[in-house]
Image 1 (cartoon, rainbow, N blue to C red):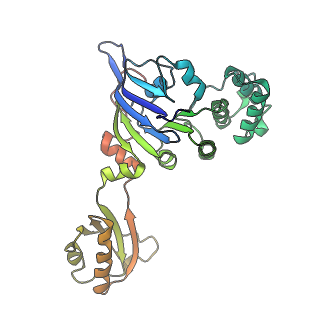
Image 2: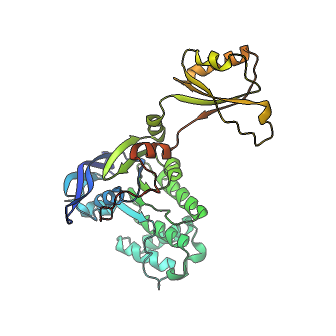
Length: 340
């Protein structure tokens, strides 16, 4: 794989002709994904994620802008790109129901140009990796939803791609099947330096567990890009701690609020589910940075109170998403009449 970016896009746009006016699915996207990176696109339905993947996988031409995958142009070098990529989508059809699992994968191995011996070797290897040994001679039409998606996953790795595109790969799967596919993906990526994954997903936990960097996408635009920690810091710059004490000292809150580096100190709701709520008080303390925590703990002790519990509050990726997009995943954008 070339040493340059695994994915490089500049000003990438896609506009659909529609009445009464054209619909912009992508509005000038700039994107760089490095070799070996696990990169996520996080956004609601209609955000433009699938349109972007279709362009990068040479299934759709851009209206304007440029894009390269593994150093090859998506418009003029489609054959070269297709040799080094593959794509797995959630809910996609698994192929021909009359074939068995093993026959299905063999058929695709031939589509990908594998030699006979190598094709059968890869088929049997991926059946074992994806846990489909018991279904190897089972007709595809009889497979469960989770088994079909494992088959899709195996198909997507038959040609040993350098860049793997995963478009909602765990959509509709139960927790166990989704976990298995995530583990398979991480193991595949780790097996060879430079293997790159671009994932689109609705699932915050999935994005946080898997991705080195994440782009939050909505209405055809990238709103924010960074590591999960960097994105969280965009929403919450200060450090917020929940402090539980055995009692509230005299002038405790006022004393804490006056400390250098303390932005605020206020009472917090106390979870007394363990039966000890009457013997404790809780404070929510906002600090300019973590270094101010030492003076807070020291001040509490000097006033005769004992620290019972301490926890740092972190915003979630969902908090980041709602802050940037203005709605949650369950809220639908205005219909534009065009799938994206």
